Amino acid sequence: MQKQRYSVYETLHSEMVDELEQIKKDELSPIVFARGGIEIVKLAIERLRQHVITNGFSSEESEVSFFKEVKPQFMSKLIFFRKLYDSEVKRPLMVDKINAKKYFKREIRKVKRNYQKRSEIYAYYKSGATHLDRVYFLRRPGDLLYSADSFMIVDSSFQTLHDSTVSEFLADEEYCAYLYRQLSVTETVQQTVGLIQNESTKGLRWTGSKVALTELVYALYSAGVLNDGNADVKDIVADISKLFNIDIGNFYRTFQEIRLRKKDRVSFLNHLIERLEDRMNYWDENPKQ
Image (tube, rainbow, N blue to C red; front, side):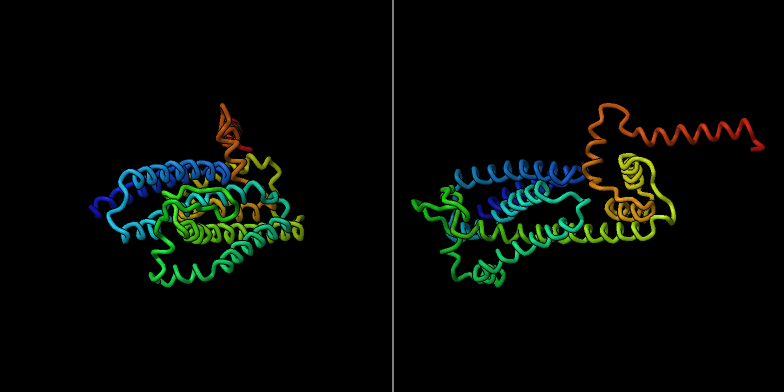
């Protein structure tokens, strides 16, 4: 029975991960990706909750194991996507390099303060200790449980004292990794812009639209012609921005707008093909020029 129950948990988790991987491949903007992730995880958690309410647990040990190990694998994703959504909505524009850098550093400090505030529980969880498991990870029917930052009553049939705390620890690990990546991108772009300002009269300059350049970037990325197909789109953007002396801006959002075009979604690439064919035809007709 225990193995069968864990098989259900694993199946629900695997299905959730597969759906998240699918929308990740769609190259959505971070905000749209976060929204999609929230909906997928919410549905998975509701299925998990219904299974628990209907079937219960065979022992206190299995209940502790569920709320300490299983549920946080789902809840942490919901918390992460919620934080990702809020972060992307509130973040400064990429052109505002200084404030963008300050914003991500401030978010990292908030995560660190959260760890410090709950350091005893974090140490207990990370150490693998078990002596307080019955207090932290068994439900207490009849008790009124409240969410961490408000007086909202939560579902005591699917909530323990600290399963959400563990979930937030796991979410913050993923969220911090995201914040450090964004901080790195911001610093790279800032360095690139500084180079552009210092060497604006040197080298090639992109004088077409940023939308057109974004088309070109994603064409190169999709074709897999850089680094044997292992180049990430962010790396391609960084190098092309440096090469052509341009800040390409929020390329995720621009690409999403390109995808939403009702017709001629690759207008710039089609334009390149037409101009190249025109050039070839001209040389065919005028071989000595």
